[in-house]
Length: 365
Image 1 (cartoon, rainbow, N blue to C red):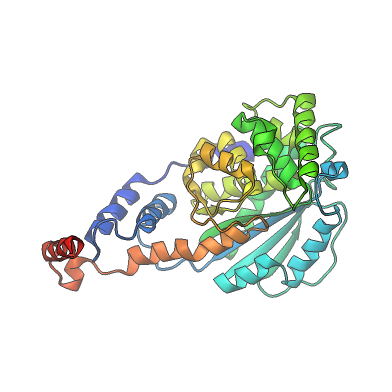
Image 2: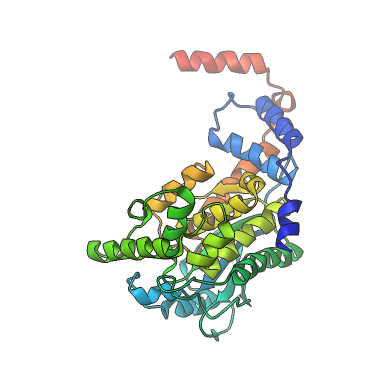
């Protein structure tokens, strides 16, 4: 399934983008006056193949959750049990991503792709929970590979299948989210390998480690890379050796969305690591990505540079869960609505030349 989906990802629709740019030039505003919103609307046209978007009613955030064996090395300020506890919070609708999703009119889908145990609890309206375990958490990659190659492929394919199911419920804009104690360590290792950077440059404090604890985390990443020697030209191999089930799942979500021409808002550091794996597997998937925000984690900027993405927001967010991606949703929808609903000069009965002259006079003042 993975190979078929990669092959099915098509380039952006250049014709739709040209038409969107032409319409932008005729709207009742000075050229370029809406800044990045204009190019964002053009990108949406290329992603979806549609120039006009009268809103994006079906907004979804998919939160992949898994446990990490590397958490046993003390690389997080929180115990591994917090992953399952947060899954219960998602189910109750009380986590940060639930609050933001309700505010933005998005639905939340949480996926247990690799928790050690099961999570009991009732779901709430607007939240859906899936159990799609690849395994009961990854293995401690300081001692052995995090997962087998077959498990890495299953994780990615699980993400693809979740997108396919959500499309049947309606899917216009997708956001990625994560939950997993220890996953910034896995993401740091992935980033160091795929970006060719020293672990010390791309490993941060994660959940709030002290300087000494962060240095320990750096050492763990260095040792793991030295032990496994992951090949940067083999993204699935990198995922298998030092990754996480939820990271593979998010990579699959991105591939599934790209194959379905659905725009993807990627969240922070963990989603960024997953996005780079997805793009290394399928370079054309890059065109369907929108960077929601910039995380303070040092590795996130390295990932954004590799992906050549400029984030929409920079709010110092480092929670994960998809919170930054959900916050960026109304900006993306605003860009689409502006292109669709603003009047052209002809429709408004305004002389384009007269408008330009008036605008230039106001600038000279």
